[in-house]
Length: 87
Image 1 (cartoon, rainbow, N blue to C red):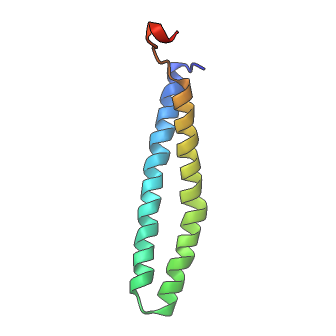
Image 2 (image 1 turned 180 degrees about the vertical axis):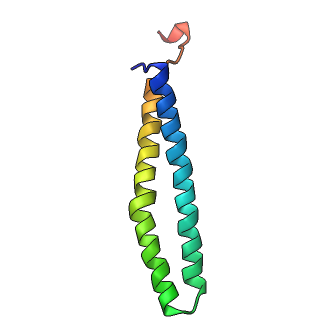
Image 3 (image 1 turned 90 degrees about the horizontal axis):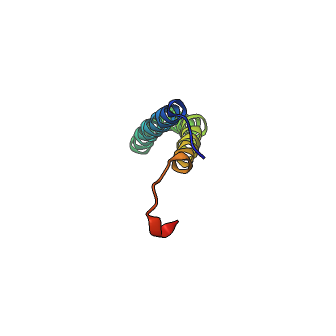
């Protein structure tokens, strides 16, 4: 499967954007986890874990799926020159 240069650039942009967003969402999740573990106030702990649930459901999971799918699309759409003995 070969993609036009415009679609290849779009797939690459989607992959990079979703991958970096995934890393950012994971960093926010980690910051909330540290806050929840180190705080003593019950409301702050509860709020941290509720926010972690929202981040996991609506940021980490969709961005992870988008990064994997766009990476697979890019991997299958690249033209790879094979050596003549493999043809």
